[in-house]
Length: 149
Ligand code: 5GP
Ligand code: ZN
Image 1 (cartoon, rainbow, N blue to C red):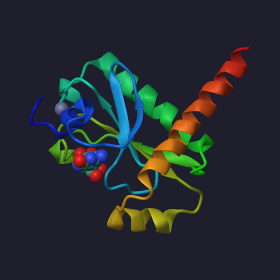
Image 2 (cartoon, helix red, strand yellow; image 1 turned 180 degrees about the vertical axis):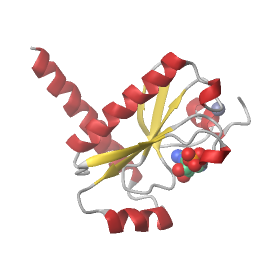
Image 3 (cartoon, helix red, strand yellow; image 1 turned 135 degrees about the vertical axis):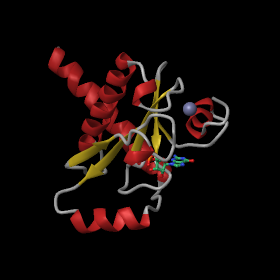
């Protein structure tokens, strides 16, 4: 959808810092992160909200969010956990009307920093942050390969 910001990001006509991409999904850093590494997972095809989203694609979005949460734990960002949040509809504070899953890394005892992050939402070293998450995804892939071997 040409008027949609996240469709433009997927198409590369609006800028973003990419974390992951495949044929159906795109993951990129939130421009106003709550914590360092705050990532958004979106379907490449436009879907306004959950009513509009194919169920199998919804499952793939969650699977990728799950992998990114695991990658964050394995990354040098030092996450101990993550909040996975999907705001569905205006009533639920959805502001960009192209379905997206938030993956917000958390650390033990970060309550104060998390609260400050909600207020400030400033980007931090975006290229290095995305590279750290991609390295976490590589570590996860290797770990899974070793488990299978
Ligand atoms: P929502 O409230 O709709 O769940 O969240 C929308 C998210 O999109 C917000 O966290 C906001 O910071 C992020 N966002 C809005 N515009 C842009 C943009 O142009 N680029 C990126 N990377 N994120 C954006
Ligand atoms: Zn869209």
